[in-house]
Image 1: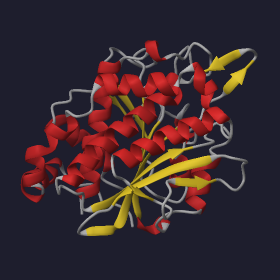
Image 2 (image 1 turned 135 degrees about the horizontal axis):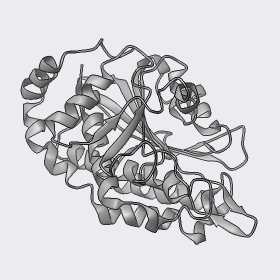
Image 3 (image 1 turned 60 degrees about the vertical axis):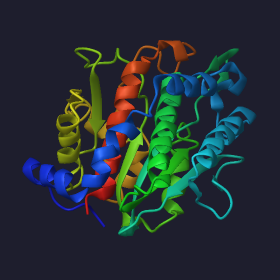
Amino acid sequence: MNLKPFLPLSILIFFSAIGLKAQEAQLENYAASILQYELRQHVKILASDSLQGREAGTPGGWMAGDYIASYFEKYKLKPAFGNTYFQYIDTLSDARNVVGIIEGTDAKQEAIVIGAHYDHHGFYHYAVYGGADDNASGVAALLSIAKAMSAMQQERYRPKRTVIFIAYDSKELSMKGSQFYVDNPVVPLKQIVACLNMDMLGRIDALPAKDTNYLLIVGADKHKSNLKAITDFVNFNKKMNLDIDYTFYNSKVFSDMFYRISDQYNFGKHKIPVLYFTSGMHDDLWKPGDKYDRLSYPVLQKRAQFIFYTLWWVANDV
């Protein structure tokens, strides 16, 4: 089921003021639980030499998957597959998606998918490709958002729709992890109303940035939905003041390439509305120089908080 058509800003403001009044009063406190030092620690561990670049199916990739699953368990996400968070990818040896769930209330049969890939390029030519931005940054945001949503769940502020958290494996292998999930979903694809994806979220030096306070969003125009209205509303209502760019990677030159370049595409090709959040391409991309100390954690925190707010609104806009 797709999200309902575009809603005017005034309707969204009414929705925020009336429909979720009790939750809204607490929402900023939960967003504040997304902390810079925790984001930094997640990125530092996932991009460390000990994980050897997190190549899919390698011991380092397994260590990364175990790390993510341990936080899903800590945050009391429901395992998606009986008693386990792991979805083994049949087409690849030893590759695994990590999937946890927060069940909704009034509309729990509908679901929002929020995800980030955790694999990278591994050890190559005597160098570790740590992939701090690509995509330990997105995974760190995913874990921090899961923490905030989990706290809400435990205090009985559950979303109306079910939220499915996915750390995809094998993105660097033609997005086989997200493709396998779409082919073997936890809930039928027709019940997924939106897919939010985070890939490369921690840098401040990629085009077309005019300053550090920016975020690039791809895919909002691909399918009829009110996702762009929601992101614009969040930016205004929560006074995030992010310079959101919907056009650069959606230009005639880049649109098809960047829409297809990350895991949201496997959902989008089934006409599921998508948002792909990124800080863009930079000089360290796919190089050993993509290290944890080259990210901006204050900006990563702000972007993660923005995505948390967006997720909450999408999960409750029924």
